[in-house]
Structure formats: C-alpha cells, structure tokens
Image 1 (cartoon, rainbow, N blue to C red):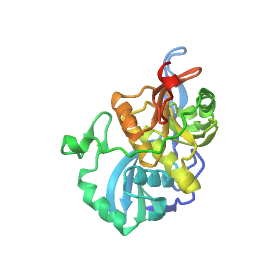
Image 2: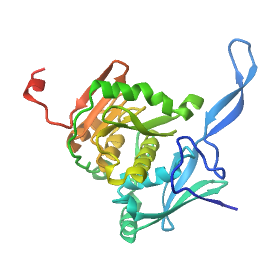
Image 3: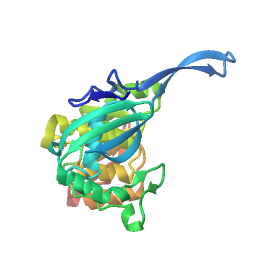
Length: 291
C-alpha cells in the first residue's frame, strides 16, 4: 500500500520524512588491506527513482537522494520551465511505494498545457548525452538573460569555500554526494542542499530559496556548487535569474559560451587561495581591460 507524506514546508538539509527511505544506509563490507578480510560498516548514499507527476501526468523520473523532495520538485519545475513562479504550484504530496517515490503536484492549468506540449521531447540527462531529443535544434535550449550584478570578491568566494563542508553532512558520511549553496554577497552560506546528482542538488537549493524568500531569493549573492560547471548548471541558474555561479571544479566550453549569452558571471576552479573568472556579469572598466 503506498504511503503518502505531505512535504510542503521544507526540511533541514539531510533530513528525511519518517515514511520515506533513509538517505544513508549502513552496510557490512569487507575491508582489504591491513588486516585482510576485516569486516566493517560503511555509510552508503541512497539513490532512488523519483517520479515527478503534474496533475496526474507523469513527466520525468529522476534518480535522486530521498531528501528535501519538496524543494527538488519546485526547483526542477522552475528550472525546466514548467512553472513561471512558485505560486503556480498549489499542492504537493510524496507517495512512497516499493518501486520508488512519486512527487504528485497540483499546478496551474496553463502550466499543465505547456507541460503536455513539450512532454514528448523532454531531454532526460544521462552522463554525457540527451534522451528524448530528436534534433540538434532541441539539444541546447535558449538561455535566459540575467540582470547584471557585481562580481563577488575573492574574500566572499573564499569564505563560502571555507564553510561549504559544514553543510555537507551526507558527503561527510558517504563521500558520494554533491552540494549546492546560496551565499550572500559577503560569502556567508544562507542555504545548502545535497544530492547524489549535481543537477538535483542545484534544483533543491533553488526550490528551498524560492520557498523561503520568493522574489528576493537570488538577490545579492552567488551559487556555490561542489561539482564542475556544466552547461545545464548555467541554464538552471539563468532560468531563475541567478547572476553568478561558482564551481569547485572545471567549466566546459559550452558552459562558458552560455554564461556569456546569459550575461552571467561564471567562476570555476574555486580552491583555497585562488579561483578563475571565465566571464563577468558586470561590464569591465578600462583599467580592468588593460590588466
């Protein structure tokens, strides 16, 4: 019998509803090296199919960590262009079954019509490809323009980096999850979310910020992600007006091109003591151009 859980209102990072699967499993393993064959316990991140259902219409199934699913559903709906605003999501329930989880949402009628029109060509992301896309024109959707904002200073980026690990409880336990955090203009982390998928972590963060702050969710700050800066991460940020993305790892050339199209600041290889600015959101001064 399916179990239903109201997930509106948000959960703290890493929290799980008692009726839902746990995000971390303790498993008996055999450790090789040292004392050969020594048994031990290992904390393993859970990964589970999560179906996103709108007004009874199943749209996508994503593999995700079973935490903060109300944030994930809202963030995904916004960054995929299904909703234009958080107020178009009227209700949400999570249904657990033996096969996985289903996030059942009730959305505005005009959003459902738009969803049905593009449902056949939903681009399901794989490790390095797209499924459900029939032509090259569909592969890379147009990226939204963002409002230019000041580029965060080195101190702000370094402050966010220094405190990111404090918000990565699942990563600390399992070593298998990504994090996305919203930092204010001084680099203080306001909110963070984790998931086995880097896109999911970003969607969860976006959903959490929108639920908490509405139209002011992404004003005066930047997103910090523990992953590389792929084109999807740039697209998702641009779709909700985020003017700056900072990644711990490398960007792709396509991500840089899309950041330029969006007018977004893109920073990558953010490490203690240094980071690389690949594109600036704000116009550079003449002095900066000669540096």
